[in-house]
Structure formats: C-alpha cells, structure tokens
Length: 316
Image (cartoon, rainbow, N blue to C red; front, side, top):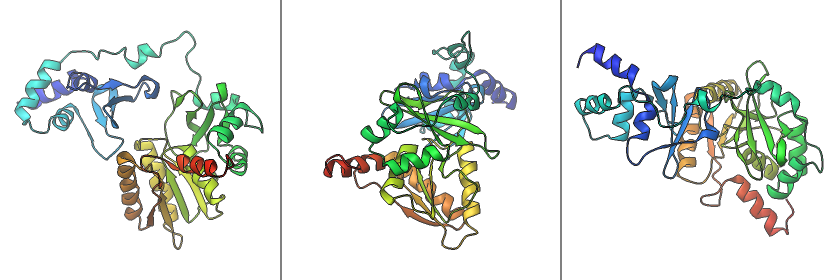
C-alpha cells in the first residue's frame, strides 16, 4: 500500500465509524462528550475518546493513543496490516451514526463560556440544596464543605447539584465537574485540568489524588484536612491537560523533602489501572508513592465515608 493511500484512509475514515461498526459496538456518551472529544463506551468500564476531528483516539485508562490504523489493530489485535487496510477501505467516506457533536450541540443560544457560567453560580451556604446533598447524601463533614466553598472550588449548581472547578495555570476556571442527586457529568466546552483543594499555588509535600472531587473531599474529611496535604481529583479519565497539570504539580513537589503522592483511586479494575498510572508519574519525578485503596471492594472513598457515617448512626 502506498503512502498516499495510507494518508487517504486516515483522512477519509472517522475513528467513530470504526468504533460503531466493530462488534460488539461502542456507544457515544453524549453527556460526557464535547465538540473536540467524543467519549465512547462499551461493556463494563471500556472507554475510548475520539479526537482530532475523528482522525485520532486515546484511552483515558492508559497511555494508548493513535490513528485509525492503530484503532483497528487495538480492537482486533489478531489481524495484520493488510487486513486493516481492507477493513478501512470499507469505512472510507462513511459518517458516524450519531448526530455529530456540532449538530447535537447547536442551539439558538449556545452555551456561554465555562468561566462565565461558573461566575454566575453562588458559593454553597449552610442549608442550601447543594449543601444538603453533600452533607446528607454524601456525608461530607461540615468542615470539608466549608473549606471547599471558602476556597472557591465548589459552587451551588441547579437542582441541588455541586459544581467542582478545575483551574488553569492563569487561575481561570477551565472545566467544571457536576455531581448531583440525579446527574453526573460536566459542563460542555471545558478543558480538564485538576480539581484542587486548596487551589493556591503553595506547594505541599503530600498529594492525595482521586478520580472524583467528592472522593478526594471524602479523604479530606476522614483525615480532617491535613495541613501538609493537597487534595486533588482528575475528574475521571486522564487526558493531555490533566496529565500536564499533574506532572507540573509533581515536579514542584519533587523539590520538597519526603514528597509523597497518595493514589486514592477507586477499588476496582479501572481504579487499579489509574493507581498504576499515578505510581508511574510519581516515579518519573522521583517522588514517593502510596496506594490509598478504598477498603470496600468495588467502592470509592465516598462509599467508605458513608459506611462510617452509617455505623455512627448517620453522623459523618
């Protein structure tokens, strides 16, 4: 196959088409997708992100990424390059079956930029809908809720939802994770970095890193907000922005004596893979590593916090 045909297939085959037409088929998670990143799911815990306008993909659970040729070989590892070429010829020129992100997101009043939407939301206050959700459903201690709200990383969302901010290097809100009684997702149009408490630039020698903001806040509650610790969360999958922010943070920690990264990923297969990625990041910069695996198999640190509250008659 000539180089020109390889480039032609790369241009004409959308990675989403490959996912949708490779059995068992993958399905688009519309709530978790953006115009630039289409999140596909299959089975239990399988996730791939389609990027670069359909020309690329990456795995949030590992460092794997590539083009359509690499995608076919990942999905069907037993076939050779010649069979990959034949498969891609069948897909050339086809469009994904879902309404593409631009069409799905087109509205008369497009979403406002994430920083402006964040600015419109109020900090949580005692007894507010979000406060009640975090305190009564998630059993976060009052001290932890007050700390997150006071630090400006938690705000009141609609319908009792909690908004958790990721900030970029300039201190601007870059992404917002949303958790509520009936909703789990994020604001569209953002670019994930890290959720951090506290968000200030001061480097601390100990980092607790979880998948979700509520999980790292749960550890903070159990530890009563240790003064030597930065509590952070990736918001799920670790994309390029999250990896860059994490590595910059660990590089700063490396200058401190006894620096330690504590992985607080979920106690399941996906969480174990995240923890190994956290370990690799720590080792890359010569920082110590500890694995804070939740003691409830299949659970997360908020499950641990709620179980403790239940054993105490509902008191966190």
